[in-house]
Image (cartoon, rainbow, N blue to C red; front, side, top):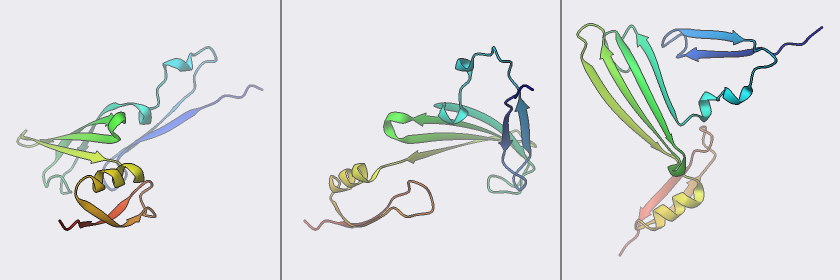
Length: 139
């Protein structure tokens, strides 16, 4: 009996925010895995979704295009959202920039900015999160 490996994945925002889709794939034994790419390792990604509205983004139904770009050298993620109103076709654009620092780079940046560090906490719920309590240095 031959054993087959099945790849499963889901995509979507979840039952509270929109539909979820699932798919399964069985590849032939001669398929070259070099052509596959993990979406979490891609540096650019675009996704579409639609909503009935009445949520964080808008009260009216809308389509949402999310463009995400990962800047590996800067430990940053830039996300651009295009919100397209389904009724009047107006488009709104939002840009969100997330910067991530390890403790050493955060300390260096803070000390070079005229502040002193009172406390650093790393045990926050978000993995890798860093909370720094600062005080402006007196001159």
